[in-house]
Image 1 (cartoon, helix red, strand yellow):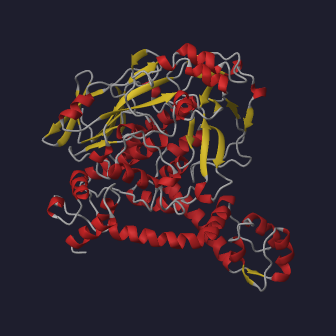
Image 2: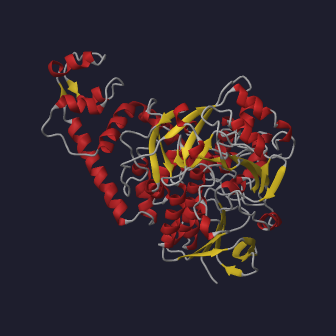
Image 3: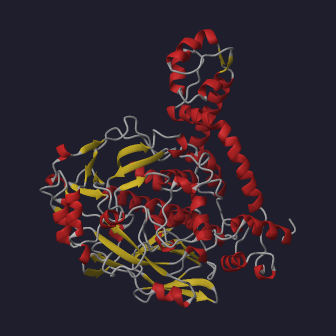
Length: 616
C-alpha cells in the first residue's frame, strides 16, 4: 500500500488534515481506531465560543469543513458577547453529537482520493531523517512520504474515576501505544497532560422549572459564509447552580480524588477546570454555574457543562442530586479525567512539520492544546502544508495579524505550553482586525490561491464583497442635514449636528446603529444587501480610527517578520546578547526576527543587537 500522506487519528484535527490534503490532490490514508467514532465530539456537544468561534470562521474561509458541518448539525446558535465591542463577538453552536460525527464521515467519504483503515499506527518508518512510511498495529507496513499525527488524548491514555484507573483515551475506547516510544527514539521530548469530562445524564430525570432557560438567538446566524442556512427552530439550554451543600459533598471525596491524592501528576486546563478544582481553588465562592446542554434532537442525554470531575462515581451522584432540579437525576455515565502524552510544540516549525524529522507533522492535542476548534485549525494547516510540501511549494504560514490561527501556532512554536493551551481574544494583539465577521475578507483569497476554496465558495465571496462595495459607496455619498436629523439624534441621547456632514460620521457614534439610521433615511435608492453586509459596514465604520492605529503595529510586525535568520545561525557568538536570549534562541531556532522577539526572556534590546548583526 502506497500513499502520499498518512493521517493518524480521525478527530477534529485529523479530519481537517485528511480533507485538506486530499482536496489538494494528495493520495491520503486516514487511520482511525474505530470507524464508528470518526469526528466524534469527545467532550461537550458544541462548537465555537469566545475566540474559538473566530477560529471556526477562519477554517471556513480557508476552505475547511468544520463550519459547514457545525451548521448542518446545529440545534442552537448564539452570538456571545453581544453586549461588548464587535471584536469580542463570538459565534457558538450547540450541536447534535450523533449527526455531527455522521456528517463528518459522509463528507470525508465523498472525497475521491481519501481512503480509510481501522487500526492504530505503532511506528513511523524513516529513511535517514525523512519519513518513508508507518507500521500498523497488525504489522502491516504502509509506504508514504508524509505523516500527520493527530492522536488526541489516546497516546498512552489513562482514565481516572476516583481510585479506579483504566487504559483508554475516551470512554469505552482503548489507548494508542507504541508510537510515543518510537517518537522518543527519534529524539523528541514528551510530557503528560490531563483533561476531564462531566457525567452524561438522563434529561427525563430533571426538573427544568428550577433552571434558568438559555435560548438561542432570535435571528440565528451561521459559521459558514457560503454554504449554510440559519436554523429555523432551536433547542433550549438551561443554567443551574451549585451550592455550599454541593461543595461540601464534593469535598467529602477529595481523599479519593486522583487530583489530590497524587494519582494525577500532569497539568490540566487552567480555564476549564474540574468542579473539584474550582471549589478548591475558589474556596470563597459559594456557587458555580452549571450549563445543562442537550446532546441532540432525538435523545434525552444531557451534558452538564461545568461539572467535569474525576471523583468517585458515588460522590458524583450524591453531589449532583443536591443541585436544585437534579434531585432525581439518573446517570448514563460518570465523569472522568484522562491523562495522555503530548510533545512540546517548540519542536515544530510554523508549518507544523517537526524540526527533527522531515515529513512528520503534529496537530491537535499532541501539541498541548485543548478544544475542538484549536485542534481543527492545526489539522487544516498541517494538511495544507504536507500536501504543498509534496509539490515542493512553500509552506502556508499565517502571521499574527492575519488570523487567530496564526496567533495560536505562533504561540505554540515560540512559547510552548506546560498546560493545555486554549485560545482567547486576549491572546491576539490585533483582535480589532481579527473579528469573526471579517474572516472571509482576511482569508478567502488565501484559500483560493492555494486551491482549497472552490468556485462556488469564491463566487459567493465575490457577490458579498460586491454588495459591501455598493453599500459603502452609497453611504459615502449621503449627507446628513441638521434639519432632518437633529430631532431624532436628540431623542437617541446623542449630540445634534451643527452643520451638514457625511453620514459616516453618524454611523461611528456608539449610541446609534446603522439599522436605526437606515430606518430614519427613507431613501429610495438604498442598495440591496444582506443584514450581514450592513452589519459589517457598520463595524468597519465604528472601528475605523482604531484600525488605523492597529495597522501601524501590524506594519511594524511585518517588518520584523521579513528579516529572516539564516539556518544554522550561531547565536552564542553574539556576546552582546543576554545569556538567556542566546540560550533560548539557540534552542528554539527562530526563523525570523519577529519570531525571536516573541520568545519569553528575549528583550527589545536583544532584538536591536540581533538586527545589527544581521546587517539591518
